[in-house]
Image 1: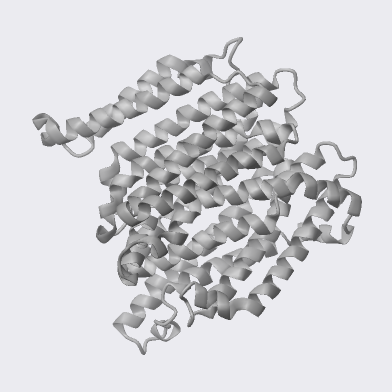
Image 2: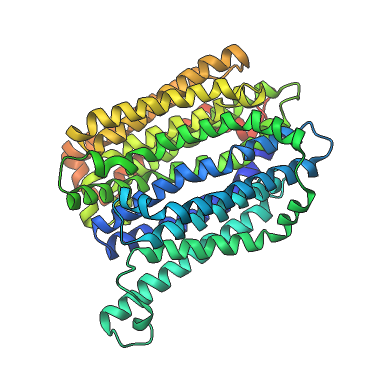
Length: 499
């Protein structure tokens, strides 16, 4: 199969679980923001920020390490069993640490009466971290449908349980506390039911992966483990720095905002809800990453590999700028995905979309340190981005609130993409179509700003039926893309493989 066509098909399959499935989960945001207060939703945003940090740490970079060593090792089963056993042991130690230190941790994070939150999230983290290695095996074996099926079931269970707890039980309790379903709801748990739903779904996912967990009986190869740790630990730094860039703002907002604790949590809730509106971009990047990582490794030794990587980047950027315009041009529709009280933060959504666009570019560019085993050098790029995120958030959140966090995210990912491109050209040169990226980036900004000005100031625009102007702009952009690059995808040429 043509390499780009194979990557596109794999991304589409992973998208069934990542884009379609998680988009269904994304539809839970209206449920949360209409059912809970801003402060309560702030609790959800904060805890999922913590899981981002710890989830990266508890995998120890062995997901990427698995792909790297299965390319060279004759005994792939030994690589798998070594990685699985190491991650399992590390996560069991983590559970033990939580059990010992739950009281001081809950006090420090200002949840002294909710130890259960920490136990629930510890189990979620362990189940998800251990599942990462079996999922990596499925990806390496090109079993995208198997991967997508389990992911989709996990998301489906999460959605159904959320609907059961929040729609059925909570509303039954509010209507008649003595009803059958009303008695099943405890108002003291509140948003904790979101966490419980996640925990049950994660445990079901691990159960479905249980046939692959028999790999633990293969034991640990000590020599191989040392090599994998040497390669993978810098990936922990990279992943941890990436989580700082993505999640730090939501973890520290309540500590840096200059208001009372209730208002701080409300601001965190607004930011977390509006962040969700950039999720279409995030989900596409995630689906792409699932397919691209094994793809990049498997094609590294091909004669035209760098040409393929350049083509992948070009069309990846086209999709991302299209998503940017889709969300921003139809913001009057997307805003209904969050409650009315949360919409005061909508101005940050375009900024966060652009930030995620640069994150996707960085994901593409990261092949240089993964393929050349320069993961330690690659970690310095992520650390630089993390440092920039920390500095900008601490410096500007007290004065500008969550708006500063959004711009800090954009500054971080843009700088990381630029630095990674420059280093990549030195250590693993790929002739990326930089002019095409610049063209589409500024074309998208031109369409967005001209649409904003037209819809706000032109009298005829205000008289048009809803979304007519949005659709005109969207179609105009798609037509430009079609005549510029789209036809090449379907016609095929000697220079550009057909998708």
